[in-house]
Length: 353
Image 1 (cartoon, rainbow, N blue to C red):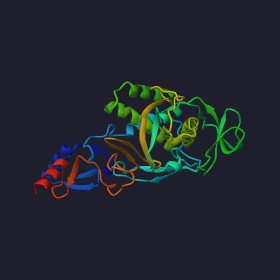
Image 2: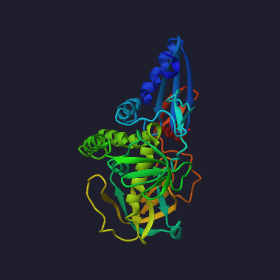
Image 3: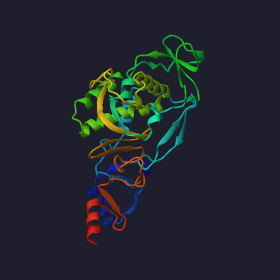
Image 4: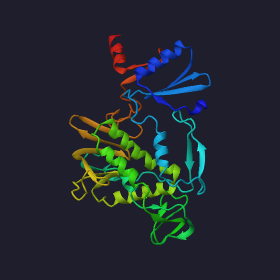
């Protein structure tokens, strides 16, 4: 086996320190790379390279440390497209996956739907927010295109769906419209998968690692569709978008594919723990946003800050980003010693100097 394809093993800080100490005793070549919130360790022995990672934020292993098994399970139920439609595979290696590739298509993935009412940018407003339960998983339950029997350069007929090349604005077209490729709609092959893991998730307590694991499995599935079948991926995005859009109104100030923030209570929304229905997350709290994925909820005791690309709550206000590259880490990498220590020990040392 090539050293490039040995999977990454996640370690706690304590396990990392022991691994480094043992490698030094055995006189093995080691390489350590680190960023603000992560440390990567490579240990070379003979013709193999063992690779490890450590999370500096909480010092915990991810709920799913080896995601390859999810991909292998999900791939078995997807009608995989291996060629055509402009499909091309380009190298995109990462430390976690040295052999990783990126899949590109002539049919473009527009990504997540989002909306903001710019009239309220950076204004503190009293709002109500409602989160949609498993938006993409809910969309995966709906009819999917039968990609085994395409029609090209055709008008979409009854019971069919069409797709246009190189269009981020309107990649999916419905009955009566021209499309570059058209497929019949058939029953979703994902129903059993979605119901299985959604039920497992709901049976676990909130905040538990098991619940987080099943949630991640569901989230990964919709993303993997881009790799395996771009048309199924586009359908999921389309269904999710039109579903949330039907609930938007003049009081909607912020919205993405799985949540609505409103100036008023939305008693018309279906509220329950069921897939595809909503739950109330904020009830008349103060809300402020800058743009999509940059927002905060303000309370007497402090702020709940969400800033895209930054660890949650690592800054105090979306208008003050001087500390945007700082994380609320519980651990830090000591370059001099080559070890990972609790951040509180570093703070105590600085205080005692």
